[in-house]
Image 1 (cartoon, rainbow, N blue to C red):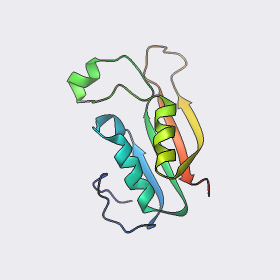
Image 2: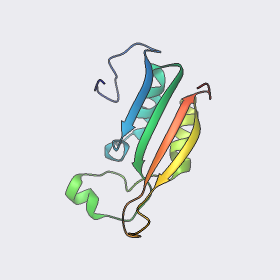
Image 3: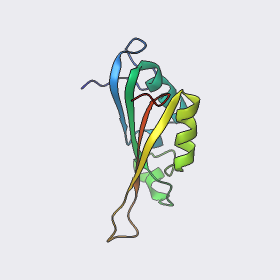
Image 4: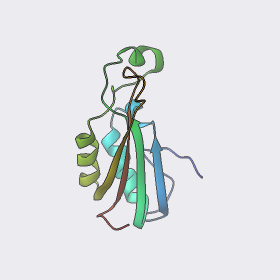
Length: 116
């Protein structure tokens, strides 16, 4: 496990088998660039996992926690992945079925041009 600047990862092209972006994109002014940078570092057959909030209306998260975005539409992240040369293989929506007012999270599994 390694951590780095998501906009300028300290790795060569094709260095990583797996990259995880967990609850980060909603803090970024340019999340699309972060996905592109992750794709650059993935090996052929590598996997990018993205977990981030589904779209929501919890405006207080901007003030309390510095969120720049109130979640994402799955199509938006899928489009960014495609533009970065990735294919989204699976999207899982995780939510608390007992609490309808809680935040949901979407988990994306993407590969370089669908080669996993």
